[in-house]
Length: 157
Image 1 (cartoon, rainbow, N blue to C red):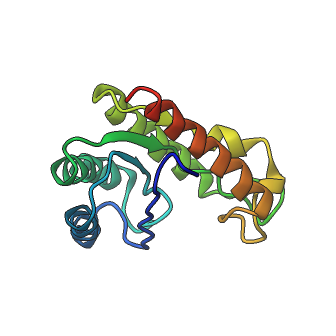
Image 2 (spheres, rainbow, N blue to C red):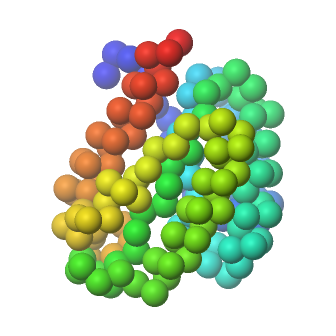
């Protein structure tokens, strides 16, 4: 509060789907942003990890083209569990692979990383009953992490 105005683009479109880039470009044409905290790892299960990795640079390019002065922060995708349990879903291996592929790209581009995966991985209580979304406690923990990562960038302005 009092430090930044926050906007959010929530979409079920995924990397590899050209509509995602159109949605991102539209939002960036409509509003100026100083900081963009982004992730798109939980959608597009029909795309392979190789297709995901091939499409990731286009997302970054679209963001940079639409907000050339914005500081970027990439967030890792959080774990997938079998409900709100300590058991990770088989799909979690794909989450980890996508995080690693994306991490390699953002590191080469000097984009800071907000490691939400690490915030959540040891806390099954942060998962909602579907194993994908966050519980109220998870939302609080993730929000605190995101706010801290944004505040860190704000401090460098």
